View 1 (cartoon, rainbow, N blue to C red):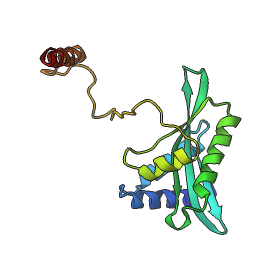
View 2 (tube, rainbow, N blue to C red):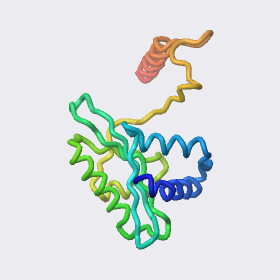
View 3 (tube, rainbow, N blue to C red):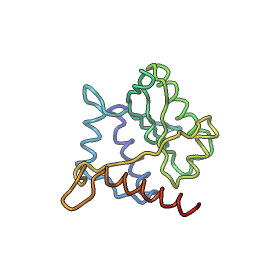
Length: 175
């Protein structure tokens, strides 16, 4: 993606959000997306797919780092293909592009983000050689979250103790 086709990216992103029943992009979001893509240190990269005169697909990637491998990782945040252009190999071409970018950047892994209920994406990625990872992803809203003990609420240690007591109770009742 470049500044000349950024509006095409926003159009595709808006169509994806609409098809997934996610609230539409507003002007501040579009401005942040533009700034974050074209800053000196971009926060993400987007690649667009075009057939003839039509922009039909995009892939969004983000670089991260694996201390376990001591190598960078490339995370594929999203691959989207317009409905009329699905099952033509465009998604696979976008995924191959992401893998080539990861190799070029010396990445140890390509991480793929798939919503829990999106079975089609899971099948697509597995068909294209991805294997399920052995971890669950969590999110925290930094503005709504309170880490640690709040007034009147149990601590993490209390939570662990309660789980251990429940486990011991189940073991004792099984005897």
